Figure (spheres, rainbow over the protein chains, first blue to last red):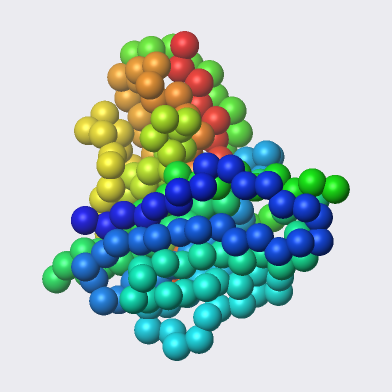
Length: 118
Length: 114
């Protein structure tokens, strides 16, 4: 079975500092994709960053980077130079094939609430 | 703005009723996903369609059904509604159904069952 675990229900960070949000995953499929989404208080889900299981380098998108450690099955999100607008819920997600049928089931973690202090 | 539209934005209905949620994917996207987000269950994948055909099924109740039409818009039908069905329902779209495609989420439909 596929599983995403986010162990930090809430995190606090000072503005302009870096913060790491943890995510561990479990899947038996060798081909999978890992995603991070941001959900502000307004409710929309915003795509942040993607890492493929075969990608050799860690993904980066502006101030977001994904610390991908395949052997440890972890895909932590690093936000550099935090801004007040980064305060939101952050979800780690995975999409992996289930079997010969090739269907892909997305699985989301329970999320981490990040609060950025001025 | 993700380019994915969902209607209605809010819906209040009574137990036992039936509702239909509508989603229009981004232009060019063939794949549509439906999700349910509630406080106790988190974000749960319900079902995926790709170019009109059901592609993957998640934790979707038998009281719920969905379809994707030839113009690629999708509808999620919820029937015999219960209080526990109150949630935020998201639609997302992607170009292809594979592992690497990022999904663009719509603004969601907030369903309240009283």
